Length: 220
Image 1 (cartoon, one colour):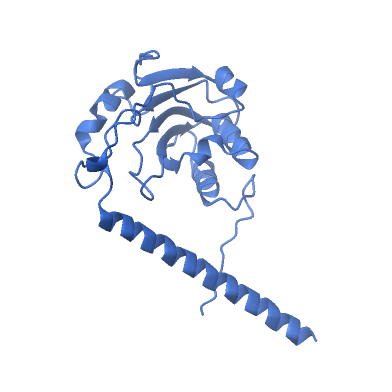
Image 2 (image 1 turned 60 degrees about the vertical axis):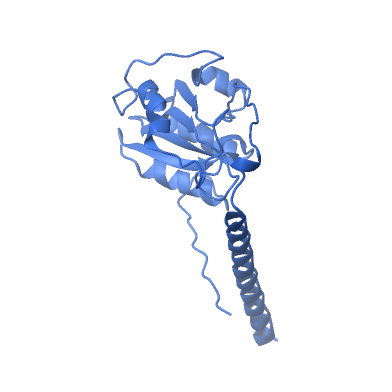
């Protein structure tokens, strides 16, 4: 069995074992003032309590988190996992940089994308139009209201939600039928992938425990 060395970071403001939270901290802390980034993160980042809440608040302080794109289910990560793209710009100061967050819902009432229905650039054209031509989000934007896909939420409203960014408003009519389900080989591949990951983690844990036992034996 091979022991894996786990990387550690001691320069983060918020220490966490959550890879996504650590990944995001690394990105926005590394940006220079005016630097921009777009990061894909799973839904749990948007609402995770504790350290997740503090990191979201810190992100909105240090950066202008101007846009969240809610992606269709299963586009990144594994089948069924919901993800988002966060667009933000590092501020010139470290406080109060986010005043409004625009959210575009590309998930509700969208087809089940996969081999039969591939996600193409055409599906993003409406979002691109709403986003505007200027990458720094300074283009004029329009809140489409409760029936539209693009809405604006001010910082005070987000604060009232406990900095929960899992914001949705459209009723999602579930139209998924048998023809839209993943192919059997896709499901089998996902199961194999998860089992392989689980076995690797078990091997690593066994290696750590054996190392600890050897150290205890040496001490005696």
